[in-house]
Every structure is written in C-alpha cells, then in structure tokens.
Amino acid sequence: MTGRPTLTRSEVRALLLHYRIAEDGRPISEDVVTAWWRELREHTAAHCQAALASIPPQRVRHATAAEVAQLAQVAALHPTDAAPGSARPPLPITPAERARQRAKFAAAGQRGIRAVYEAMGWTRHPDTELAGTVRCPFCLAHVGQVCKPLTRTRDGRREQRDPVTRMHPSRLASARATKAAGTSSTTRGAIPPAPQGVSA
Image 1 (cartoon, rainbow, N blue to C red):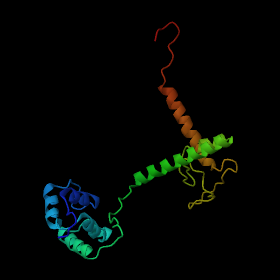
Image 2: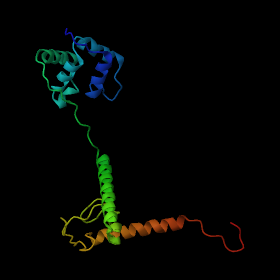
Image 3: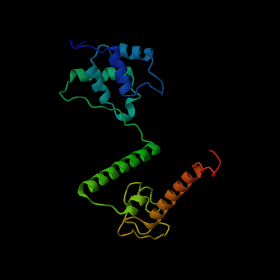
Image 4: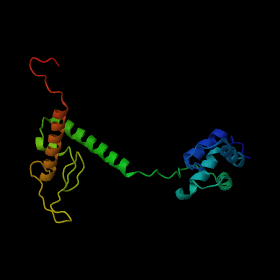
C-alpha cells in the first residue's frame, strides 16, 4: 500500500462511468462499485486511471477489476510524469446526427458569409440565396453550400453551373418550387375574408 490517498468509491464510480465499464445500457449498481473498490482500494486513482488508459480502446469496456489491479500495480512500480491519457472509445455518430451537424455547419457558414457581405457593403445575387435554401439534386451540395463544379453524374445527366450564381439550374428550380409550395400552403391555410354584410 502506498502513502498516497487510496481509491474512494466515488472515484471508482467515476472511472467506471468514464470508461463505460459494466454498463450494458444500465446504471452502474452499488454491488458493482463495491466489487471494483474492494479489488482496487489498495491503489491510487492516478494508478488506476493509468492502468485503464494502457488497455486498448476496443478492450477497455470488458476489462475486469483484477486485470486493472495488476496494471495499477505495474503503474505504481513504474511511475511516469506524463498524465495518463483516456482510452475511452469515441461514441459512434449516427447518420441522422451527422446530417444535423452538416446542416448546422452549413448554416453557420452562411451566417459568416452574410456578415462579411454586409460589412463590406456587397450584395449577393437573389438566386444564389434562394438556391442555397435547398439541397442540390444534381451535385448533392448541402443547404447553404455553393454547388460543386460537377458537370456530369454517373447516370449520364449533364448540367452546367450558372456562372453568376454558381448554382445548378435544377437546384434553383427546386428552390423555386419549394418556395411556391410553401406560399400556396400558407395561402390555403389562411382564413378567407368574410363577405360584405356578413360578420366574421
């Protein structure tokens, strides 16, 4: 046992949560915390973290308390001045989350471009603004992004970007159709004025 403060139950729980050990999609029970604490209580939190950080990311979630105790003993015998890294594997990003991130970044880019144009007193072509509100059906450029310099798709379709707006014509047509559909739906949803002589 070292002269440094030994591991506490709170530190055990924090390590289990950080490295996502013994989760299985459920909260970590007190029995699990107790079992790990009994195995590791002779070691310090720093040595236990160094032990967990030395385990490959793909294996750390399946590590046992006995294995970590052995590695912590090695860390105690061979101390290092370097702070232990984190072996916690990154969380997977779902396609929906990736799409939300792209839309968020594109919107931020558009705000930055508008701010620069306003600061410099420049104006953008209205068709550029309109086309940028939808995704390009030809080059698949995301909302807020300028169309890619693609002139032919794999299925043989050909389309040239407009030299002024730098957008594909099909994208502008799609944006106009979307805008028209939104306008018509708003008009249909409006309450019609009451005929003269009839109270609403």
